[in-house]
Image 1 (cartoon, rainbow, N blue to C red):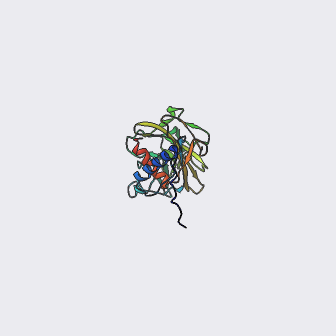
Image 2: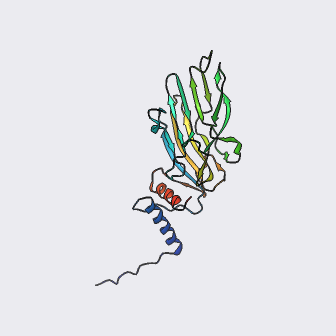
Image 3: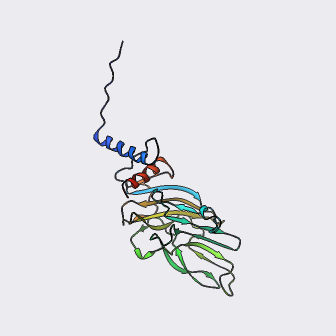
Length: 244
């Protein structure tokens, strides 16, 4: 018995629009399959990472320094240089480009030891803090997370500085720009007693000039993206397509 051909079912207008937007983002990202469309209500984009920060040499191997592309648009926003030897160490967070307007939440402090010198530090923030409510906290020079040295000046027996010693699940407060607009972000790090540094994840607020809450990774206004996933690629491609 010959079956009658099935009639194609019609998609709702809303579903069709989501599929079209999704296909456009995936195509622009250079992938041939669909990724999930970003929810329209999503405002915070969170990316889990779990990356150990590698040691790098500013002269011989600057490319090994960890790079942060907060909004997955192919533009590096910050670098994490991490230098370690038996005599000195320095863990920093720096804008990726020289004279960049990207900035770090921080403060000015002093090294501990016989020789006291002023250091501009990146603050180790707790969870639940609104990043973006106090513009005076942000400076591009607030770069040093932690450091020590065996020669910190005349008569010195060594010194150390920074808020990130033995820090567990602490946050950097970050300010960066997308097409000239200010956006706020955070990055979560842990530092062990043995000076193993791990980036746990990072997030940014998609709405310009709107503060972001450190540590918030769930809720109706949050979308989580795996780094390098089709969703992340499509998200970046969609923002580039829209000029955001």
